[in-house]
Image 1 (cartoon, one colour):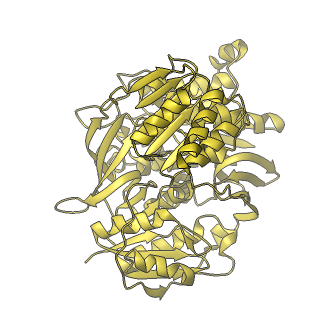
Image 2 (cartoon, one colour):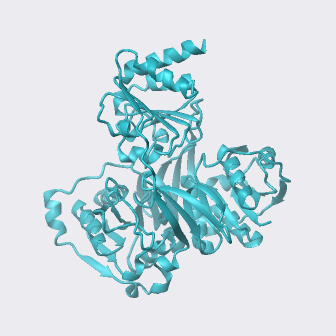
Image 3 (tube, chains in turn cyan, blue):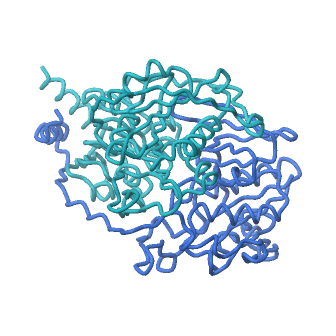
Length: 319
Length: 259
């Protein structure tokens, strides 16, 4: 069975959900091999095994953290040459795209970004699905040259467990001198909010211009639903909420079971980031807002009255 | 200091973008084109760096004849000159071929810094900055929210999901910037008038020693096999808040089993 390389996304050994999603997709295409770059592989192995990794390639060296994507590109390029995989799956993050771009040039392979599905292509290769033009179109595509390199969006599959052998193979990596000149000189970890990850959450509640800068009702409502909090570009540009939480074309794309837009008009840039959500709910003062064209349920009114009332009602029903 | 900004002419994102049925490529004729909004941030950053020191800003694009509009807009903002790579063979090029052509053009230009937007607003792949750096053998500092130049070094701040990073690299380097980095200026009347006199060179693939067989749809490493418009969402229920909007909202969520 052909080998599928999956680049593991992890936080010092804690495997992110996107990785278990990628392993699940990889099993449909062949036999998944997890590629783990950095420290903490021992802690990660159990999860990778539980989600079907037949092999776990591990590359670690003490100074790796000082570089951007160079170590990961070197390891993947090396494995593409030695293991001749049928495909390489990479998380669709800014870092993942940098890695995919460099690998594509180095191996002269076609690359597809932001896939929401990848499946055997019937005959040969694989076929992918992407949402394009701000969610207005769905396209299917194939890689026609080299080894398919595909970046896959979060939430593209429901992780399914399947025991794998998770045989560990150590990979040595030499960072070329040319890449050593680029260094990360400072890294300040972000404080965690305690809420679910925006791109992984089943429910997302976002606030926009209509909050007037007060995100308290948005956060309280989100917490009553166990949801992640998002923000529109207008809210982020106004400095009301950090950019890491921006939903839209230049922020995150989310595709939760439920998306609640509070005080967001629904410009195309925002729709690009949430249009594929299963159920959409909006609260907005302006009944002409384009967001109401997308909703399953909408309330025209003041979010500062409606959200607290809804939060209280949920708390009451929970008893 | 020579700064080259790579820009793209894209179909207006607020219009009804679609595909060409004949070859499944983006329809660039049916919808008005403009300078990709995300590239305006790269042009603005280039101008700020040039204005702070002694810099010249060249705008580089590839695409069919109308793509020259993207150069003109950049010149109106204040860039000094433009280079337009235009060749019939380019139609349908993927990111790999795009980076090949842009890298070949960059090799004919003098550059200390190459600036790009974080992605185009049509393909939104965001691959070209890293690909350019790989081809040119120089550092790529992507998704910058702050850029500073100190002699022959560039320092950027990146704002990722997990951390805020400071990255340093020697020049020349490729830097891509996000929409968080600045507020692009509007062309002034003076800028619009001045742009008419600024030089724009048009280069073909032959000028760049790029073989036509390496670019275009036939050379692409990927192919779109089908496309389909997303069916419009069936319109839902919209109510006006009469004092119990929050409770009605929860009723809906409960019926959908979210509560």
